[in-house]
Length: 446
Image (cartoon, rainbow, N blue to C red; front, side):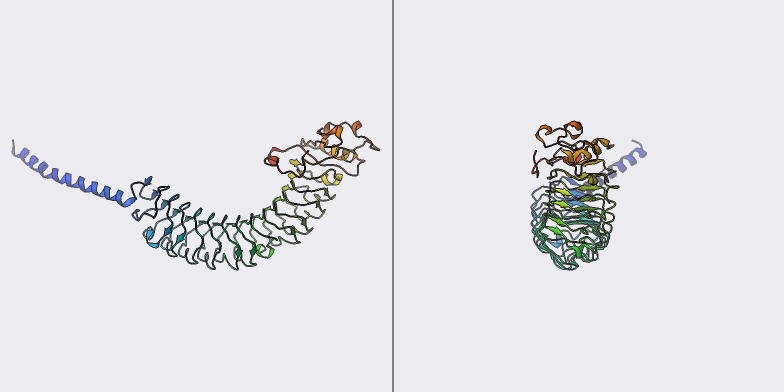
């Protein structure tokens, strides 16, 4: 063996143990990285994302990487959360703690999470939230608290949530919205308070929510429209008050809501609407009044709604519609639903303004195909849209489309012309879009 070969051999003999040591060190680092990441039972454990969903965990693991931005802990048994469990996660942006049987959260738990963007606490057993629990969440945009047991929202609870855009509180037990409750939420766009026990809303409860566009108050215990509180919401575009016990709506009930485009008042026990109820809603495009107890529609009910496109009045008990009821909204209205009422006849002037309709539904009314329907028959036959009305009476015409009834079959009419009748009926073919799910609990059944 030459001198050069001996030197190479000595060098390799020296480097081999060094390589082994280096490989071992790297392996230990990798192992340590895995150990520091999360429990081995977690589904996914990466540098920035951790998924420990539905593992039966009773506490939050404390060995997540400090660079973690998303943690999924849904579906566990974490009843209590202490401040130390999340204190090292300075980069955390999204935290899922929903459906985890949480009943208590320490007030300082979330304060270190300055970068938190979305927080999911829905579907838990939370009954009380300390007023300082969200302090420090300066970057929070989405807060999910729905389907808990919250019955009281303390003053100042949301005062530090200046960046929150959407707040979900539906399906809790909230009874009262107190003064300035949401003060500080200057960038809130969506507020969902549906399916609570809300019976009272302070006049200033919604104060300073200047950017609010969507407000859901359906399925509560409201007995009237909270006009003073709502009037402050100048940017509101969508409002739902369905499934309350409102009864009657007074004049100017929605005054100040100049930007409102969608108003839902379904199943609100409404029996009367003032002729100035909707004054000020100059931008309203959709109005839902289904499943109420309206009997008549006054000629001035919809006078200020000259941008209305969609009007749903099905499943009331309507027996009469005044001549000029649709006069103002006729040029803009494209969808009108009068199905499942008690209409038998209408004046010709009722339908004549409806020049833009593309969906016209008035089926499942006890229409009487007599002289009073001659003018409507002419209207339907001359309409560019293919509508049809089915007769309920007299017996010999029952279930016959009005358009197929010959003029000679209209008995006892003084003059068989389309212009003689002082009154006429409204009933059009079933529109699939509007009749879906409307076949039960009808006011009238043929």
